[in-house]
Length: 288
Image (tube, rainbow, N blue to C red; front, side, top):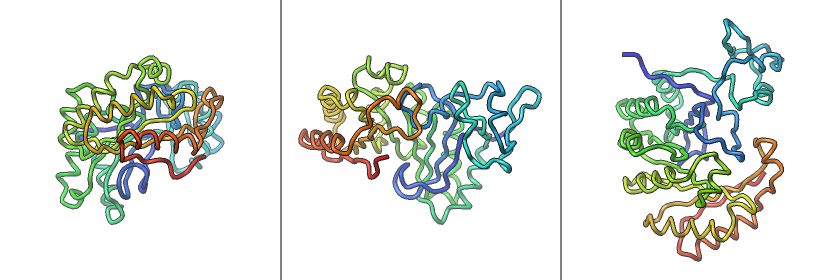
């Protein structure tokens, strides 16, 4: 049987911000949300091989062969000019990996790793690969000590989580807004699936962290923070809440018109949560 394959946007062999400890992070290409504030918008679309990126590549790392983009990583100098010109927020530098490829990479870096995180884009869009990868890690004598995490927007049905959660050690779940209309404006999708997913993952004991993006004048309102408090209390338990501050780094031109979230604003929101009985609140260490 062929090993499941995934379309990968990028791999970090060392990260301390994508879950606990030191992590190997696989960013899968493609997302079912279309967030204006996304700081990795090039992971949203999937290349349609239009060829617009080829003339933008001064390193000749991209070419159009038989109607398809071909990427040569050996000549690429990672200037990312191709990402800037792509009309559909896709990454022409994606590469296909199978499970065996990732296992080999994990073994190479095993002495420095605590775990593996699959992010995106939205990793659950390539569900079969993620399940197969986590199963293989847990079955591998050398890698079995690594924990397996997902960084997700939660837009997945119960049957998908049923296949994923048994092999997953933790989920970091983003909630963009507790007001459905605001959530649709920010992401293009309703928030119902994400809220249902948070409850389901928590019931399974796998909700490591709930993430909430603070956008000035949009999601830092009293109503939104009250919604977050009510939701956390409804879940029960000491779930970690990570408040992310909207910044301009990497976002699309439209989001550059928005005000950046200040440290004072984040601290005010964090204090409100703690005063309301939500003790495990994490705030950013760096503001860009």
